[in-house]
Length: 77
Image 1: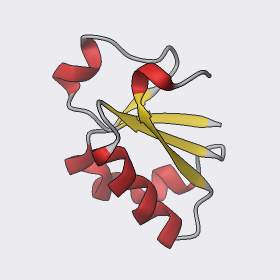
Image 2: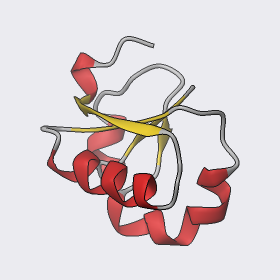
Image 3: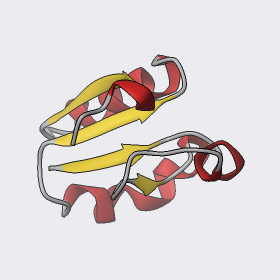
């Protein structure tokens, strides 16, 4: 399992899930191949679930086993 927080770097440093990766949503397209090699499932999170839903839907369309955990505060690693 890999947790990816798609919030901005500033949001991430203010609080995050221990062991999670920070790849802001606007930078995801630069990391597609890297993300596809990470241990599945990929758990996307953000502040409210809107950005992580976009990320999860996109990677699901690529065949990646992933889900939207919504808020990072709701993630239980």
